[in-house]
Image 1 (cartoon, rainbow, N blue to C red):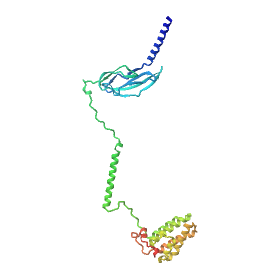
Image 2 (image 1 turned 90 degrees about the horizontal axis):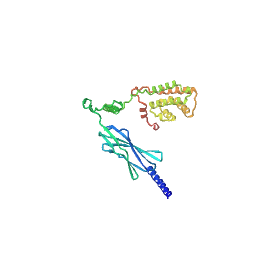
Image 3 (image 1 turned 45 degrees about the vertical axis):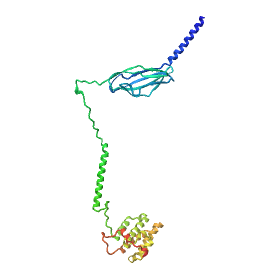
Image 4 (image 1 turned 180 degrees about the horizontal axis):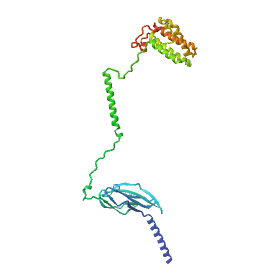
Length: 333
């Protein structure tokens, strides 16, 4: 019988040890500390809350979001941080930033955490909030509110104003210029004075002299040489005979010159130049040096023998555009 009682007592001891160990393993702890327990009005301090519990257990800390107690305000809550420790336990840490604007000694209420059906409270912390020390015996130490500081001078801040003034001045100048030109009945854009145009034969001789000095055919540039030579003669014919030679073929020009009594004596000279020029420009003919010299001589002869006896003054001489405007339709002649 004594042996049976002995085994029964041993079994009860094992059961009590099991349940006590299980209860101890499920216990949740909460602790609160502070960076500083004495602050001035408006200063801030941080409360550090740590919750120790079993891994996998759902616990819910109860932290006020705005006011910890009357006179103590909650400014910010950090994100909870979980740390794993030994014995299958974890520690949940969270910081609470608080401040106060009333001087007093506050006994902060305990923070709480819900662990299943149980509510566990933390330790309490005393927070002393003091005012700024003031010496009432020395009123000269009290200073009034400082005046508003003027910002430093930065040129970039005035760029819009500067650009606006410059644009306004430019606009005023433009308007004044337009009004003055309109009042004087002048064109808005000033026109460059045209140089007086030389008489047709003088202009042609001048261009032939320039062509002679360039010595193009001596350099093998036959096509360019005959192009400039015929262009000079065509412009001369436009102004001298009022024939639109710039838009005609060599054959059409020769047909009209043949009907002009003034140019009858030099018709052969002009024909030699135009026909040879066509061969050079279109058939890529390489004329002899003597032919090139003859073409230039014939050009001088054509101009000198067809020039007008009464020279028109340079001021009243018609321009090329005016001469072309007075051309008649020679095909109807």
